[in-house]
Length: 179
Ligand code: SF4
Ligand code: SF4
Image (cartoon, rainbow, N blue to C red):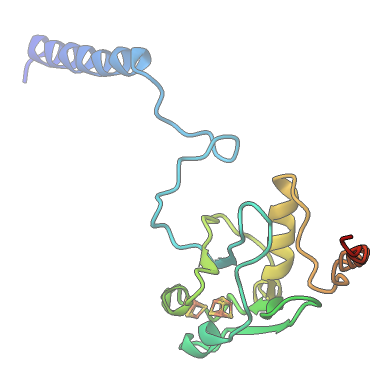
């Protein structure tokens, strides 16, 4: 290759490179500046499980029936509940998840008859492993409810006082004899 051909080839290569650079310079930015920006999470994304609650009352849907714990093939759910004063059913008081064992199979979510758990959209967890071995989902529920301006449900609260009984009606006056 003589000098002229070599120079021409190098010049063409330079123009091609510059063309790409200039094109990218004026194109919209597609880089996401994580962690200041995040991409929207797909609805079907499976993060760790979390408790769901009634949007109006803030009360968790979980009745502590233990069906999810029995359905879990990895044995990573331990929960407890009580029957709050004045209520007919039980409510969850403790829900611990060993996330280090969880395979995100979703069997617990599918087994729950009360629509009380779902997968969270947390994808960027970072911590020491021991913390994930004992995730407190009731505490997470309380934090989430508080964040949206509601008061977390307290299953240990005393039953609301019963309304006072109505005053007995005054006896009707005795009928007077007609003349
Ligand atoms: S997603 Fe699967 S492994 Fe994880 S807690 Fe639920 S049932 Fe267990
Ligand atoms: S999450 Fe559902 S299945 Fe599990 S204990 Fe609560 S109500 Fe029962």
